Image (cartoon, rainbow, N blue to C red; front, side, top):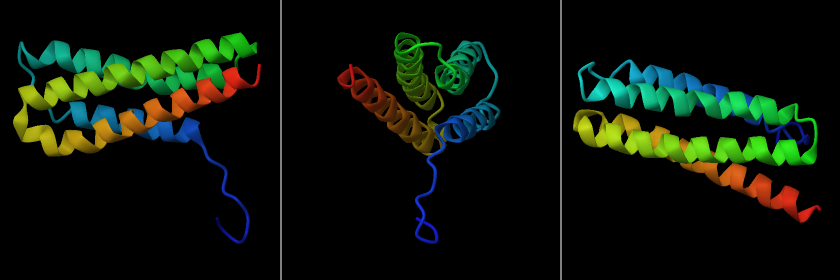
Length: 122
């Protein structure tokens, strides 16, 4: 809270920052036959979270909104998976991977809560 006013929680900005962090992280990974497909998978999953959240924010119906948030949730879970695998394949990056994994986990919980709250309103 600032000046007695509740700050607006900006999930669109949070997912954009996460996307940027994923991109920065992937630039640290050595390119080789093992890492290249892992990098591609992480970039696809990690960058789609924010893009799908933007789509959800402009959904045409409650059903469309829940569907798009569900995609965000799935992509957050997949992103966690790829971060884990990359950290295992590149143990020197495991410390840098940990905050990304944690943020993906928090986003997963947020999207799950949004789905539950939206479904309970029906």
